[in-house]
Structures are given as C-alpha cells and as structure tokens.
Length: 361
Image (tube, rainbow, N blue to C red):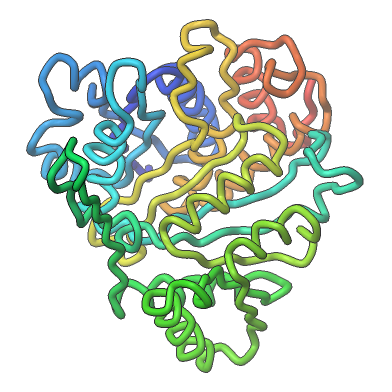
C-alpha cells in the first residue's frame, strides 16, 4: 500500500480547526484509492513564539526534511505577535529554506457560489497564477538606520536573479502549455522599475522563444489587476514576481466569492525538499473557536498536495466533491451566506468524496 508522511503545522487561529477537517477528507480519499497518510504535528506558531521566543525550532527544517509534504493551517496573531515576525520567521523561512520557489494558486469561481462580479460565472473566472516565491521583493534585504530620528533612512531591497527569474517564468510557460487555451499573462512594471522589471521582461522574451505554441502578453501589474475585474475571461495563466503575485492572487481570492475558498501550493519542483500546501485565508482571529470556519480552502490545498504526491485520481475526487457541494448549495458556512458549521461542511465534503456520483444531501 502506498504510504505518505505529512508534517502538519496547524499554526494559529482557525488553522487548528480547518487542518483537522481537511485531514478527515484526505483520509476518506486515501481509503477509497488505496493509500495511507501518516501525519506528524508540530506545535509551531505564535503561541510557540510567546512561550519560546521562536516561531519554530532552530532545527525545524532539518526535522521536516524527510517528510513527503508539509500541510500548513494558518499563521498570524497580530494582537500579540507582529505580522512581520510571524510571517518571516515561519512561512517565509520555510519557503526560502526549502527553495519552494513556485507558489501555485488556482483562481476558480465554483459553480453555485456567487462572485462579486456582476454577470460573471465559473466560465469567466478560471485561471491559475504562478508567483515567484523565494526572492524578489520579499528577499528580506535592507535595514533601518538612524531609527527614530528626523534623519531615519529605510531600505528594502528587491533581489531578482537570472536563475530565480528564469525558472519561475519557464515553469509558468509549462503550465500555460498544459492548459487548453495556452495563454500566458506576465505581470510587469517595466515603465517604472527600470532595472528589475525590464530584466523580468527580457527573461520572459527569452524563455518565450522556447514555447512558440504559447501566446504571451505583458501587462503592467496595475492594468492586469484592473483586467482581472473587467475582463477576467481573457486571462488564463499568470506569472508574477513575489510581491505582484501576492497582491494579484489575493485579488483572485476575492473573485472566488469568499476567503474561505482559495488554496495554494509552495513547490520545490525538483523535489529536493518537501513542498508545502496551505489555505490562504489567514488565521481569522475574529472567528477562531466559534466552529464556523470554512474548511474548503484547506481541503482544496490538501487536494493539491495529493496531486503533488502522485495521487491524481484522489485529488480529482476531492475537487469534484467541492464542486458538488458548491453547486448543490445545501451546505453553506457563514462566509458563504449560510449557517452551517465547520463540522457539517466537513462531513458533507467527506460524504461527497466517498460517493461516486457526488450527490449532496
């Protein structure tokens, strides 16, 4: 029997609610398709930081290196730990430490869930964003000098390497080639960023010569954000730098109709290190402990994890179950306008995974 070891980090807030829910769905899919998942939970997050002064142990990367994948719940407790501490010392530390240089985000409007765009349905909002995930604007270089004085100076340096830029753009071309429309949009700002983004455009042109079957268009990032609202049906695959991709994918999450839906993968495509999968709704401290968190994003992230592990049929069944739940509209958590709790939604998804016809009671 196929067996996979998964390191889980519930983290903060509703991470402790949605991750176990997703695991229950993954286990149902595993039972149906003849493989097993073994979970090892790590206690890292903001509570751990308040106890120890660290978001995770100093040897965390070494301890997780042998796992097949990492499954993250949520990170953040801004009332007690500054966001730049919690994010950089856990999430970004893992992304950079394991060279998870691809952030993959599906942006799909599921059937039955109304999005915020008038007269736009699932056929109009169906794209995927590939975000550079290890350098760029989030490289972490810079500093503050003469702090607190009238002469204070702050520097935040973006880093774009040829290796880092080429590999993410090439990955995006491969994804675009694999999709029916073979259409790639590159987010740039080369009219204002005369070094980094001109370089980005040059690498896009260079790599594009190897993919004559892929139609590529460059958009200034502000124009691309506007196009995602006004003409989403014209976009399919998007590639962007770390900062631009972060902003565009959050906009994409809003187009999906709820922050309880977007999922993401942090990939090391060469598989030299484990990849990490996560919902991107954050820790949601305003609803933590109320049992009302939507587990769909975590479940979707889990499906992406199974696909990465080679269990494509099980991943397909989970996404099909999410689509069935969305279309039936019989089960809705509060973020989707309903009154069902996390447990009811989890049970419904699990039932749909186990039901070939994906009927939802």
